[in-house]
Length: 293
Image (cartoon, rainbow, N blue to C red):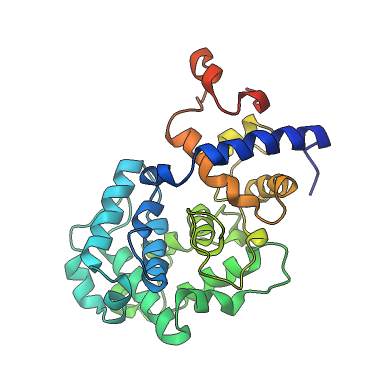
């Protein structure tokens, strides 16, 4: 991959982005769906709550919070116990009327039913993920691809009424594949939560995965801000852009390149970084010294 950062640029970026990370710490969790996952004490509950929250992390923040709260509220105090005892027919009734943009009762029911099968077969979602994981891989791409393919091959008959998951089944949206050029934002977000350790944001539950292998969860905020500070030269969001941004961030922190994700995303979510040059906002911006806008 082409190097896009000079030595001087790397130094200045690291200085400014490290300061940004210090500013946007766990006290800003209320602006993120990760907030819900912190409501659980046991890793087995956090693992399931995290997948639910990340899968629904698309659309407006208020809508995401409402939808995640609705689903996790229905699962009670322990998403793990709820999932072990989950019955798809009962799930369809329980989530009747649920709508999160284009995800409805079938999508949530099938997602939870998939998780139940992962646990029954491999002990946990993490155990299921590890089936396609190779410790020596530079990035998580191959493992993520295998995870999605394996998930979508699980039984879905009680929900969709077909032996094979229909091509238009909405649950497919929750399991994109990097081989299809998708940025896989929501799954990369989930991986960040499960793998990163060492701070009060993420949980580090999946010990066998190296944080250095993670890829940035690329959304519209990260794509736009990354262009503004020279982390990518690409125009179209997708897996290639996510890889290029991650490669640039590895020059700043080889062991933990996605540590900057939460802080950079706050700039967009909190409207601290305007879409167009705004003298008032830009003057107060925490990364104005490295911005090319």
